[in-house]
Image (cartoon, rainbow, N blue to C red):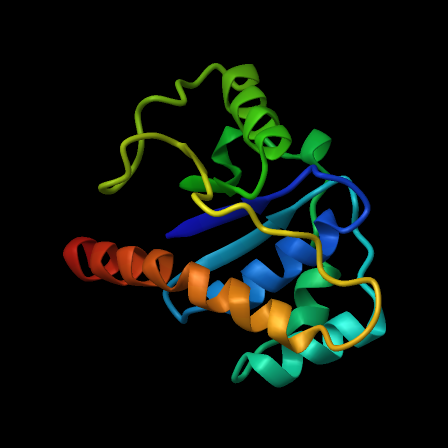
Length: 153
């Protein structure tokens, strides 16, 4: 099972996809961050590493794919963290000649807009509370993915 995490919201989009990828990491799930913004501050990487047990944010930072270099086969489903990312994911899938409406597993479609409005990580100060907030918001997604894994394995 593969999920693409996409954000196109601006300069902090790379940090958002790295944090979400780090938080959603599970042994049976391949997580692929996607954004045109591929930079993360050292203090951001350190905050993710300290907040997520066995987290490897630096690995994900090095794997951020540019949306122009991927196609619909890149992931089984896409989780977008903003409307720009959602539109980009839909465009990638449609450009590959596939439909965004037909999802794999139990997902009703290929592209899903994250239901929370995630603020940008703070420019300065303690970043850990932001990572903790995102982790709690992603918990229902981890549970959905866990259930699907059990049903389809």
